[in-house]
Image (cartoon, rainbow, N blue to C red; front, side, top):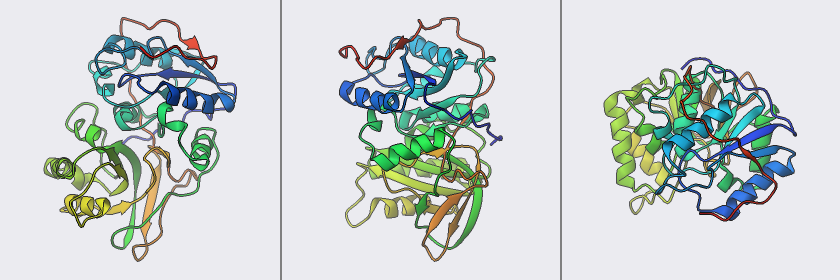
Amino acid sequence: MHACKTPPALKPGDRLHVIAPSGALREMERLEAGLKVWQDRGYQLHLSKGYDDRHGYLAGTDAVRRSALTQALEDPDCQGILCVRGGWGGARLLEDWVWPETAAPKWLVGFSDITSLLWRFAQAGVVSVHGPVLTTLGVEPNWSQDRLFDLVEGRSLSPLQGKGWGGGKTVGKLLPANLTVATHLLGTALQPDLDNVILALEDVGEAPYRLDRMLTHWRMTGALSKLRGIALGRFSSCDPPEGYAVLAYLRCCAIASETWVCPLFRTCPSATRARMGPWRSVRRWNSMAIAVSSARSHPQTVAPSFGNTKSPTQTAAAPTPWTGQTPANR
C-alpha cells in the first residue's frame, strides 16, 4: 500500500459535507443526534442534495449519490466528508469513476459499507477514518466521540488494546474494513495492495458459516498470505455455534493460515476509530497487552485513499446548510 497523506487537522468553524453514499436513510432522529454532535463542536454542516432520497434500498440513484461525493471532493471550502449511514451502495459509485484531479486531501469518516470509499481513498494516498457514521455517532459513549475528534483535530491517541493469540511482534500498515464489503472487493480495481498490511475487520449480522466462507475465500485467493496480521473488531449479531465465543470461532476459521491474529478492539467497530495508512506495530506478550502504535503517535487510526479521477458529467446541486432541523424522511 502506498504512503498516505494525512489531511489538514480539522478545527471548529470548518465546513463539512454530509453525504449518503449507501443505503436509504431510515433513522432520522439518530441522524439529527449525530449532526448535533458535530454542530456542538462548532462545525458547519452542509447537507448534500438528495441525502434523504430513496431509490429502492439506496439513498437515491447512483448518479445523484456519485455527484454528491464528487462535489464534496471538489469543493475547495470543504474540509471533510461525513457519511450518513452504511447499508449497501458505496461500491456502485466507484464503477468507472475517476478521482477528481482538483481534489485536495480531506477527511472521510465512515465504516461498514463505507469501506469501499475508504479503500478508494487509500489507493489515492489519502488518510481517512474508519469511524462512526452520523446515524451511530449520537449513541457512541463520550470517550469514543472524544477519540474521534482527537484524531481528526490532530491530537495524539492512546494505543488500541487487545489480547493476541501467540507471541511475537508484527509491523505493518493498518487497513480497517468490513469483512463482507472487503471480500467483495477482492480481485477488483478497488482492492488495495495488501502487502505488509495489518487488516482490521468488523461485521454485523453475518451467520458463522458466511464468515467462514468469506475467510476461506481470502485464503484461497492468497490474500491472507500477504498480510502481516489481522485485528478483529466487533462482530455483532454474528452468533457462533454453541460452545464457541465469536472471536474464538473466527480464529478457527481464519487461521488455517500463518497470519498473526489479534482481537484488537472489542467495542463497536466505530468506537475505536482507526486511521488507514501509517505504519503500526502490534505486539503480543504472553497473549496479553496488545498495543498498536506508530511514530506519528496516532496509534489506531485507520485511513484509506483515492486516486486520480475525472469528474462525472452530472453534478449535484449545491448542498444545503444544516440549521438543526431536517425534513421528514421520505
